[in-house]
Every structure is written in C-alpha cells, then in structure tokens.
Image (cartoon, rainbow, N blue to C red; front, top):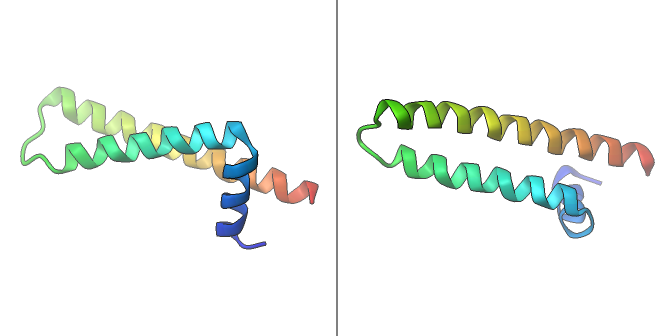
Length: 73
C-alpha cells in the first residue's frame, strides 16, 4: 500500500490519526496566514517558530503511526 492510500485509510479508520492530522492542518493554515503578512511582530515570529515545531512534531507522529500500522499488516 502506498503512502497516500495508507494515509487515507488511517484518516477514515483511526480517530487519533485524524485528530493529529487535523491539528497539523490547522497549524499549516495559521502559518499561511502569518506568511501572507508583509511584516511580523516579534510575538508573531515566535508564534511562527512554535507552529513550525508543532507541525513537524505532528508530522513525525503521523509517520510513526503509519509505520506501526504497516507492521501489523
């Protein structure tokens, strides 16, 4: 099963994976909003750094869950 198909399957069947994915998407949406600004305040720069870290941690968690799922199949 390829990565895209596995991700779609897990989004349908695994509530924890779906929750993590939704949070990842929310971080991306907020980052897009920050990127669209021509100037960021110091607070927004800090928020951007934290969002990037959070988004990466969520992505890592999703890939770990996908790897664990593959082992069980």
